[in-house]
Length: 249
Image 1 (cartoon, rainbow, N blue to C red):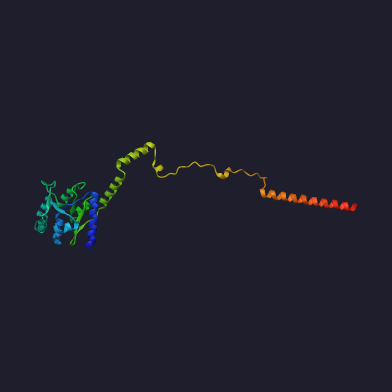
Image 2: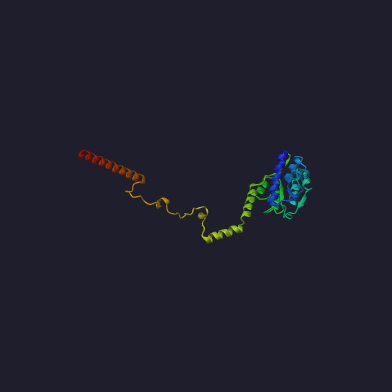
């Protein structure tokens, strides 16, 4: 099971590296819920996370997350101690602190420019993160750290980007303008067959036979019959002549 989980993590990391430009050291933003889950399941985040992600990792948090853990009192005191060991990233809520989940979501912005991973157990925050393209999501199941598969939003973003690389938007626009200038419609492009000019039917070019014309073989047979009749009549006439002559003598 561990080998299978490692292979899946490697595949997911390759997806983000090749399509969104993630490079080590990987920056993982951690909130209070993730720290509390690690404490409850006895997970050493600093030791296990670099092994799981197969590279250098910078564990980060924000001032808002630390203040939220401090405000929650003794129940999350252990999680607070864990979070205090991480690097603190500057957020835009120095004067007016917000909740940890809202702060982490604001850190990724529109395009996740700094290539942050989000490590949280907050389902609401996870749902928002999945709607952003190019933001890896991590959570803890029982005593295991899990890197979530790329979200459908990230997959769709990559497919669109690959299509644009094959035919850039500017080129497609130029092609559409050229089609309009030439008067080419979509129906013509869908494969309407052009009618080819064809010659006359070869059978129609043959000479017509006259009704009175007989076939060559039949004509030859008739000629033979005529010759035979003529020969017979001559023989009969000669025999008659010989008979007359014999009587006269």
